[in-house]
Image (cartoon, rainbow, N blue to C red; front, side):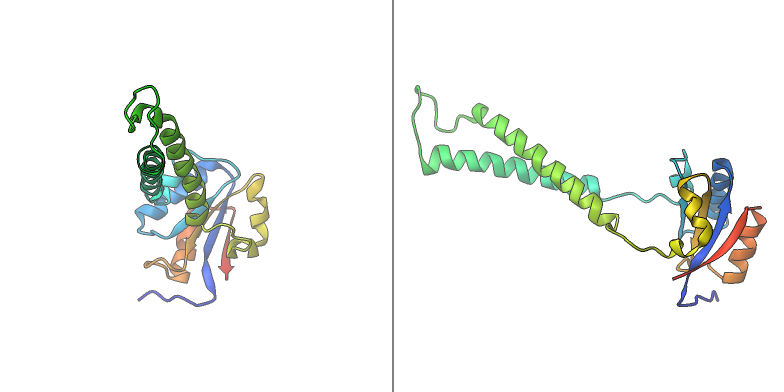
Length: 180
């Protein structure tokens, strides 16, 4: 039975090249670890898939918001032109839907865009002024030239000694215990 200490966030390995962290993430995934995160100074192709990239709900949320904007924009114009203040201009029908298209489109884009930005911020857990990995002194180099792989203590397969030995077997530049 894996043991999880309450003050432990996980164990982190430091690597010197993007290829090393990518291979380490793939091996950790093959070994059965599912709760891990990788940190690098620039995007590494394939790294998000190797650490278990999860599908996001943002496209669905944006679709719903866009539909809400389209229906709301069309209804707003329909109500004003047909119900609230009907005007016969040039013999056209009161519900002249082609003239409603520009505002309907604009409200669709506005609602979808604002919702995408807000949903991304909320679902990413931002703002996050503190994270336990900041407690590791070597982590300050992640923005310059180092790559890190952290296996979290919340992982079902996590055992402190076994996980530390597994990370050491990947030949990292260093292994650190991450306290909360």
